[in-house]
Image 1 (tube, rainbow, N blue to C red):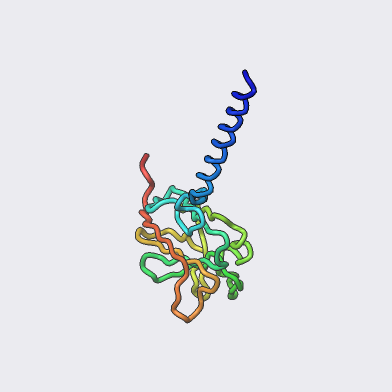
Image 2 (cartoon, rainbow, N blue to C red; image 1 turned 90 degrees about the horizontal axis):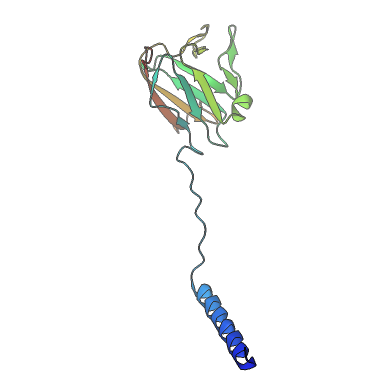
Length: 166
């Protein structure tokens, strides 16, 4: 290949590279998108409906509050599942977990059929929590006994008090 052709080829390559560089500089920078599943980082439940033989999984965001309560369908009982300052009476602590234990969790698994806890009633004994069909509501915050009226994060589930048929 003659020197003149080599020089022309180098000139064309240089010109083409300069053109591509200029075109890229004029385009807006594109930031790669990070797509997360909806459940990641949110307080959520493994199912909308539970049966007596199911295991409930609560997915917890990180970080999350140190207290968790459960309200029954008739609202006659509240269960502290996790409590920052362990409240107790002569019958022992009301909560299932301490606030410190709960803070380390990213999920909470509950065997619905056998899960026992004390209702927040003086002198109460541990009892099966999921005993009546209806809507159960979980609420999580740093201080659930706050009188400000501000609610924590909530998630609810419908419980059907019979075994799931497969």
